[in-house]
Amino acid sequence: MDTTVAATGTEGQKWGGGTEPLRASYGKMMMWFFILSDALTFSGFLAAYGFSRFKFIEEWPIADEVFNHFPFLHGVDAPMFYVALMTFILIGSSVTMVLAVDAGHQMNRKKVSFYLLLTIIGGLIFVGSQAWEWQNFINGEYGAVKTKGGKILQFVDANGDRVALDEFVSVGPRDVVPYGESEGIWYQASGEENATYTLQEVQRGFAARPDLTIRTQQLVVNEETGANEKLILSREEAMFKLNNQAVGVVEGANLVENEYGAPLFADFFFFITGFHGFHVFSGVIFNIIIFFNVLLGTYERRGHYEMVEKVGLYWHFVDLVWVFVFTFFYLV
Image (cartoon, rainbow, N blue to C red):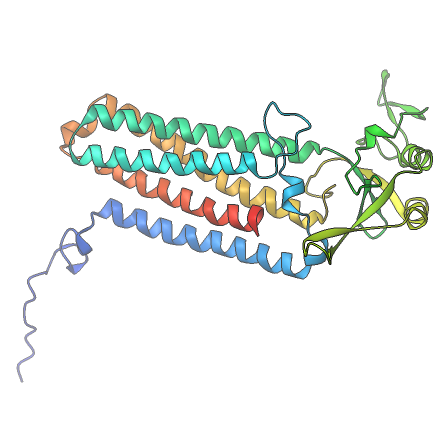
């Protein structure tokens, strides 16, 4: 019986499919594998966010009220304007990356370096904008109080507009004790050393302003407009909740508290946007390295600009992920 195996012509070659399977070099193939694995990671994070939001849908913050800041326009309500600008800049940087790759195919070093520089600038602006967005989210704008069950109570006027704590609360006398061995350093002994105001000061200020009331985290549908709105309590209900159920003051957002609503929203926001921001920052570093290699003529000597194309794949992936993050956190 003849057991000879017929020759295929691929013996000894990489992967049995030649040195460039699927007509992609080893480097580009590995970049595609990385992008696929990273896409699955982001998909898992966004799926977890979606399930959590569905579970706490009635307590989830309204995005238009959270992301309504714009640089140098303090106090101006501009919902989503700056986030839209950030998105436009990042997508624009993807266009310049395409132009850089195309210039590389033409072996035009001057154009490659120019478009790479524009891509780097766009990435830096986006990362800086995201840091600014984080700062506003962490610092907060209005302040609120939390109840024993961890719910957030926000203050509104007769028209239903948010009212900041500093508009009706004044700092009163505080009980302080020395911190450590240095008697020159003092801190508040009430357990609210991280807040500007104490709960008692908020209660006194609220009682002195009969035109104010409270709205809860609970979302209700406005029968006239069909829009989702937070439930506004009567003055009597507000006084009862503030005096009997409130346990502390919340200013801004962190991994434990969130003045805008459910703390889980802040947890996901910091984690997912931070993870994406790390990807963008890494992409900027990669682009800077490639940019200097272009200036040094490294790829001219190699005879191709494939490295620009590989880092371009990564950059386009980062831009595409942001479209989904933007949709999940800001639009839906």
